[in-house]
Image (cartoon, rainbow, N blue to C red):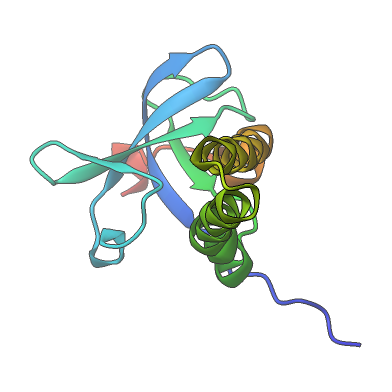
Length: 143
């Protein structure tokens, strides 16, 4: 039996610019690979990206840190995000057709989609980045 292969974790190095409760905001220098990923938000005229991460290492403002995403399987997670909602809407149409009531179809689709979004909300830790290491800054003497 073969083990399901997980996609590699997204791993980035950046500087902590704010700390709020158990979350940090990290500025990451923008690279070519930043194009399709949606973990971060572009900032500083596109020169760097901002990412929020769980502060699992008690990082402070100004610390250089390594942040990583959870294990993500692009195929199954993409299926959950794009195909399953579409199937739920189709089930809503089917319910409307079976019952003869558009309201029943609408309610079916809304309830199913609400359940899916609740699942996403409850499993957000799987997708949230976290600080995995604090890097000692390089001093002028070490350069």
